[in-house]
Amino acid sequence: LLMDTYAGKYFNQGALEKDKTLFPGYDVPDGKTVEDFRAAIERLPSQDSPEIFGLHSNADLTFRTLQVKSLVETVVSTMPKSGGGGDGLSPAEIVDKIAEDLLGKVPETFEAEPTKDKLRKLPGGPTQPLTV
Image (tube, rainbow, N blue to C red; front, side, top):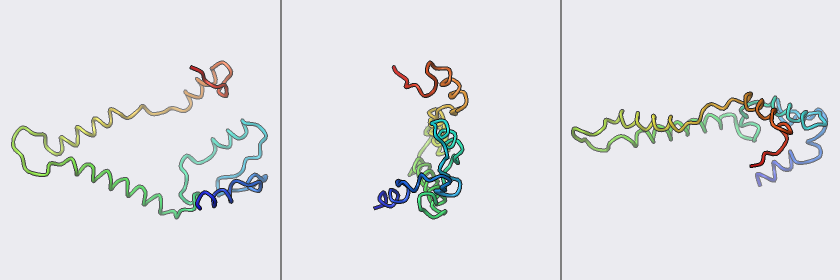
C-alpha cells in the first residue's frame, strides 16, 4: 500500500514535467544529458527531511531519540550487576574499553573531492565501469 502511494505520486509521466517541484528543494531537472542530472543530484540536500516521505517533521526527532536511548541502554548494560572485589575493571573502564574498540573500527572520513579527482583520471573517466 505504501509503495503504491509513492508510485502513484512519483512514478508517472506528470512527475517529469518541466519546472515540476516534487517537494520544496526537490525540482525535476530540466536537462538532456547525464551530466545535467548528476549536477542536479549534487545540489540536493545531504540529509532528507522526513516530510519528503510523508512523515511528520517530528519523525526525525523520534528516530534520533530512540537511537540515543538504545546507546544509553547498551552502555548501562556493560555495568556490573553485582559488587565485586579487587582486580576487575570499573564500569567506567569497561565503557572506555568498548568505546576505544568501536573508535578503532570507524573508517576514515570519506573525502568526496579526492575520490572524484581519482575517478576522473581513470581511463574512460568516471562513467566507465570498473573491472577487476
